[in-house]
Image (tube, rainbow, N blue to C red; front, side, top):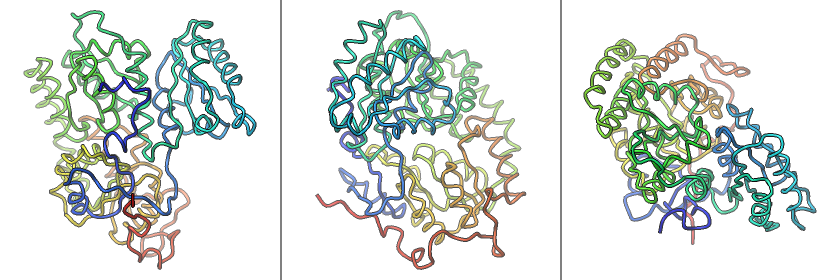
Length: 473
């Protein structure tokens, strides 16, 4: 069945057996994923984790020519403050109260949508669902039908509610489901030659670095869904093929374009480090017919970054990686290029279709910690207390936790690390951090170079999977 034939996207758990809870070793996850399905886990204690509503809002917030209405309480709309780079995006909230939760908030939804249109005149208005919609069962479809005729504007409901899934990436899937069903148009001009470059969570500099490399090969890019506007999404069906900067985030859209609009999906790992960037460029150039130009570009760029690799900024250092699995594979190769050793891995989720990525990591020490978690700082602390790392590379949310256990932290949230230029910047940043011994503000190292832990010694001595149990059905 084509992906967009259903009313909403299936959750990651139902569609791909996604696992969001795990605490073990690389060898244990390799064994557990070798069968037809991965045994599901549950956490009996969870510290924090993002919801699919936040991911859905992040997905639409980078699309120019649109506005979003968060249909829920003021607390749900506060999630927009986490958008950071897209903080100027125009969003509205219906600000439902206790009475609306019981009696319905249709009228408030109409008011918010009309206001969003009058103040911005967008091409599309997205309505983002929340847990309250699952409780009061508002008839959102009727509001959409009424207001689309009245305003002459396309209105799309992103049906997320926070109850169906434990995997926040399902929010991205729901947005892509709506794109496939309501925005992507049949091919208008079969003679066009461009590719879809798909990006969601990357910062703009990372995207533009790759777009610039492709421009040097005379390969036109339709960068979607962020940076392109509504028209870019509409014309995605006319591309020669699609390639993504992170297949783990974007595979629903990639698969949907291939199945429903015959746009081939070229699979690759994120272009991080020289080997993965060169592989990324070669795969695109080969299909586009620019192989000779690509080899010249690669030779020139690899010659230029030789010094950055030769400096071995991670020489002899042990590194803990905290990022999604696709990026982790690329970063693991980069750590090796830089002379370091991967000590442990934390990833936010694992799909059944990701076994090939785990196999790419099989050359790492089999007993290294392997955690599947998002926001579980106490599990990261437990792993770092037992396996001290010299460096932590990952999101800023866990940088302080890593620093408390003596790791020098490199946050990826606001730096460019894609492509050849990204490799040089990473090399430079790692050398600076290593030389300066930087600790986050407010965290002072003790005499042994570590800082006071937020967790008791008795807890840190426990097994790391203390709160992670096999799900009983």
